[in-house]
Length: 209
Image 1: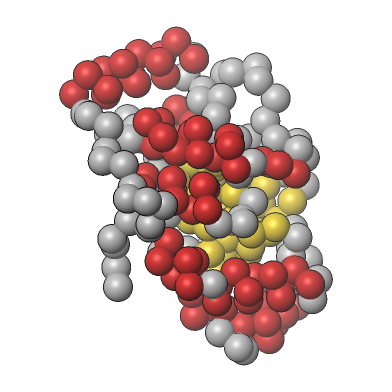
Image 2: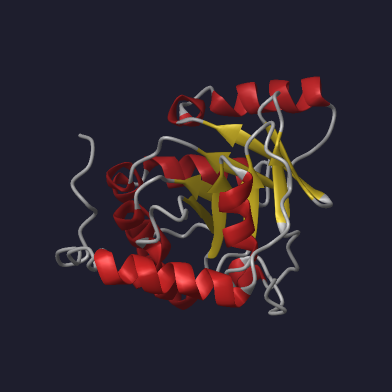
């Protein structure tokens, strides 16, 4: 595993390298806990539902993770306004957006005032390394890899630019790859997969509506 200190983006707070998604929709990340949300949870009654879920689970949350939210939605502004309201009401401290496309992750990391981005980074898809790593570093955004397998988690733990790996339910924590093994996977991937086309003028990628 890399010996580079892992921190939660611009907060500079140390971050647990392994996050675990629970069956109840919460996330345990060392001493932190998070709650998984979807776009519908950001409507005008979302705060009430988040409070109810927090009461049912019995503990507060440091962060929320919003799934299935597109960069186009973030550009409009309403999701961020709702998340900022959650923060102001004491429902969370930090916002994390999950995406499965490297262009979406790139735009969000470079343009949205969020604290973290959860992204796909597997042996079959290392495209985030072309530009997402730099966009996140420049924006002070933490990158978290979503691991649906122990192999993906092992790669995340060996990648210095990825602050943590989020294990799906049932995925066991692996022995990390060495940095050298991770670099060899990248060399092979880059030889066969060209860099994605750059985003146009700072506009979000054309996914969804």
